[in-house]
Length: 246
Image (cartoon, rainbow, N blue to C red; front, side, top):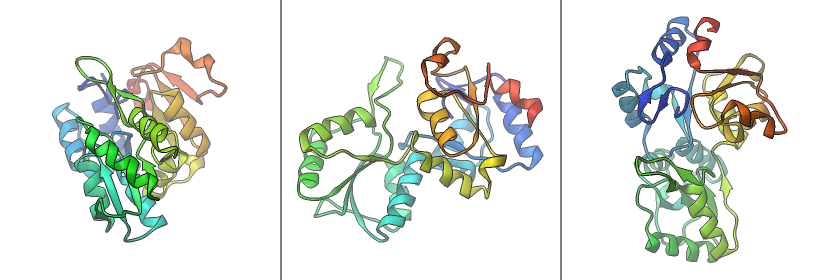
């Protein structure tokens, strides 16, 4: 989503026409984000405010992928959660109990205000045997003032203190791509992934067997592509260049 359809809260030129062309074509699609703060309904409204019509059912977040993963692993389990509505709502809908009393998992997501008290509690629960899950490995997130510590950075602190590494569910874990693929009843041979980051989007799309398209409206710039040992299937300036390919 960020860096492909919107950039710093503003729509990428051509993104509205690209989404409209996708919807008019009848091709199933999902908009993916590693951000676990918001629910799909929240994100749909935020996109609409940017001029992009994406229904909630077409949005797939790392929070939703995490909830589905835990439901598969331990149905009806319990978790101590550090995160916001996007994550807690997804876990509730999966039938999970949110508690700090002997939970099966500690689940770390994104929040605007990481609490030292919550982090300390998470460390002690992990030391007591709770399994450590994190929604995504992104170390920093953007803000108007500059970089903010994000899920990956806080996960590193908890790992250093507890001696336990988390399992990251979101990108670049190809599981998130495969879950989205299943949701649209797609096949890897006939599905494309469009992203703006080589280190999360392209690598997870590639590992899931998808055709990968890198747009240059986000994090990765053209002169950085050759630094990686893998390449996208296609590189374009923005989604505006993909409208006629739909």
